[in-house]
Length: 388
Image (cartoon, rainbow, N blue to C red; front, top):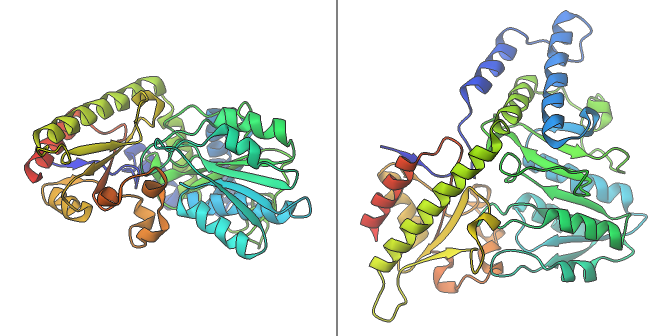
C-alpha cells in the first residue's frame, strides 16, 4: 500500500484536467493571439478558465492574470506594486513565516532601497493585529502575507487584516499568498479588502507551471515581464493554453462540494493527530521528554488551523532519517517546504513559532488532499509506529 501525504508540495493532476489539457495540446493547439479559427478556439479556453476562476472568488474576469505558478504570481504582485508605488513610499510589511517566493522577493526589494518590517508570530504561527496596526505608516505601500502557512498550517485572519489596513492607511495595498488556501478555504477578495491574491495550480489537482494573480481593478501595478503585450500588457508571452485550461477546470472542481471536502479533511487531520499523540504516549521517556509534539495547535481548536496540514516533531530521530524510512514503506511526507528542501536556511517558520533547537531537525509535515483516504492515514500511522 502507498500513502501519499505530501499534498502541500504538490497534488496529483486530476484525470479530467489531464483530458482537457490533452485536447488543447493535440487538437485545439492554436496560438490565442492568432486571428484564425484555431487561434479563436485557443482564446476561448483562456476566456472560459477566467470565468471559472473569477466565479470562485466572486470577482470579474478581467481581474485575473495567468502566470506560470505561485512564485511568479508573488513576484509580480510584490515587485510590480512596489515599483509602481515607490513615489508614495518605500515601506513594506510582511511576516516571519512567509514562503521563500515572498521572503526572497522582499529581501531583493530591501537591497533596492525599500524598508521592510517583518512581523513576528506566536506559537501557533499567527500575527498580532495590534503589532500590524502599529507597523502601518503613511509611507507603507504594501502588506504581503500568506493566508495558510505551508509548513505548519497556521491561518492568518485575512479579513481582519484587510479591514485594519484600509482603516489605518487606505492607500496601502494588501497582497495575499493564497497558494495553500485557495481550494481549502472560501476566499472573497473584495469583501476581505485584498488587492492582489496569488494562486498555484498544482496545489489543487491542476498542472504544474500554472497559476494566476488576482489584481483588483485600478490597482497600481507594473508588469515585470515585457514583450508582445499579452494579457493587456500585464504578463507578456504566449499563454500556456493547455495549463490555463487545466487550471480553470481544477478551480471549478475543487470548489464543487466544498463544505463536504473540507469536513473530510478535518476528520483526517483529527484522526492523524490522535494517532500521533497515541504513538507519542507509547514512546514517552521516564522524564516525559520523549514522544511527539504537534506544532501550531497550542490551545486552539484544529478548525482554527488549515484542514490539510499537520506538523509533528519527534524526539530522538532526525526528520531526514524518518522521512526516508517512511518512504521505503510507501509513505510519502515532507520535512518542510518542498521549494526549500535544498536550502533549509530559507525556512524560518519553525524557529519563528518557537520550536526548540532539539526538535528543529526532527519535524515532519503531513498534508492531505481530497483524494486522501482514512486507510492511507491508518497505514501511515502503522508504519510510523514501527519506526519510533
